[in-house]
Length: 613
Image (cartoon, rainbow, N blue to C red; front, side, top):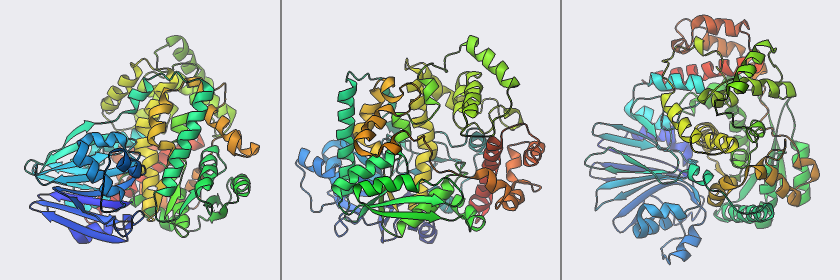
């Protein structure tokens, strides 16, 4: 796991790069230059510590690489490759020399990479299927720069802000697809590669993998066959992720089934497995449930007790790390958990992707019964009328809140249905946003592609979540939370086999009645104590409402309420004031999310954009 950066026709400021990227690779720094090209690599040494140094060279090819290819030894055998090291980096070079871009199709891993071809005088850029490992680039006229994090680019070329993309962020809560808060700065999409010529450095991007194609497939496996395949695939994925490391690999262990199954299987491949459970003062404590798994498998178990005593002092720094306004407040506990885990090891397994792949969100239950994206006025009109009569829901986990949210997105149509069902911050209050009516046209086009594809309502929702929320929010959150602490997170549930098999399974394998993740819960019966199997989805229990009205009250007020606050360029001043004073008719949960969105925007503007501008 590493940090990468580089440029064409632009001299990189090494001091700034060290400052903004060094945490991703504190073990070793290397630089390669050739003509008008610079390649910078920051190494977090995990696999083949002695032989895996980068940049690495093979014939006329040079690579810098961020990530892990877990099946690289299998690929060496499959293609009879012989190298000088045991490094997965060398495996990539050998494969690319043999197969070109098609080598990506065989890889099970997370990666962003640059391969320089000295003969062709061009760069090959590539990113893994889901987009676990980040890749940002700046392209303008004859200059090209890239880096693993936005702050690294920001402090090199000082790009202008992109107000249209910032307005999109306020509305939907994340940056859509290739968008960033800066002009001429883009994100290479997951499952994409690009070529960049040193003579004319403008990237030509190609999509090499798309989960939508796998949602269009229809598996013919019966339930028993699918269950056995998932079990076998997961064993393969966990085994690869445990054994592809020269350092100890541990596992996050919550009270949920995703991390529980992963930990149970990991113990079979690491007899001294360390597991980590977190508990937050004053919130729901999953430690007793996690302890049941740890006891059953006799893991070396740690309960990490996280305190928010320094929340006020550290919040802005944590948000700064993202280099963009970041809406998801669970970034705060994710950072603290990663910081504590790093005190014990450098590589850890997590359950990322389980909900998106297997159907873990409550909104998937009604979506499995009805396609809410079809324009049905016989449902939409009564639901919208009923919503006007219903009192606001203030308890996020109540059945009434579930019903209220259901009525809300049932009363919408098209893309608005999806936004209401997911991150609903400003849903229904859009008139208070200073935004162009066509603000979400690109997202509308992407939505229509999925909506017109003939998929079921559930598959549409899950496909959209994978492309939008997993890519734009959840994977970004965990990458920055872990790597800002020089910790590598590995996600077995996003293995190649799952990504290309699970989408095609029938809906009733994933949602059965009101049971979410049905097939994964059946698998859990083989591995986990009964008490865990039917626990509801929790994730981090974040007391955002309490934070805003408590320890962060003055900090947030000083940011979003002041004269000239940046957020007032996107949201009406009077609305912000009324929202703060609780004069807007909305739930406490939704109020907190809107305020946090504005706060995150303000922190980005002051700490990332203005600082050193």
